[in-house]
Image (cartoon, rainbow, N blue to C red; front, side):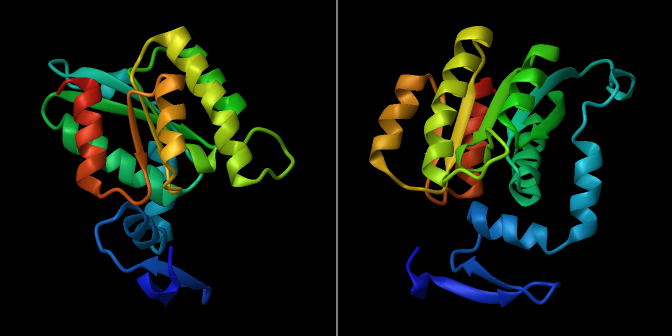
Length: 195
């Protein structure tokens, strides 16, 4: 993103954080949510699959697996899911940043939707460049699509037209790139779930 579109801001820890100028974008919301560490801790606890005894009997469960490492993005995706599910179903959300864990969780129980932040999925202990992680993510998407036949929303902050073609080829149901607004994420969830 060009420097003139960024607003520098100091976080609670005194670290300089660049915030996008456009309010309402996913990245702006993620940065805003990360500035509230108590919310993030509560979120981490709530992301584990909760017992079904807490689900109202007249509500269907919607299981969602999110592949992402940033609490702010996970919280945004979770809130969008909850907005879509209001009065219709009970969302049960689990998240991880590791590819092996993601595939393991997918095998453990049936999920209704997968949301993958391609930039933020890690494949090994060694540090990989962003483009390497994204390239490896296409294989994960193909595996999830072929094995579970459930909708997949893929998301990346890198706006590259080639990725749109790769996403289609891998079997992504809905692909978002750049800095989509919250409304676009909600719309993608609604379309994938037919709600």
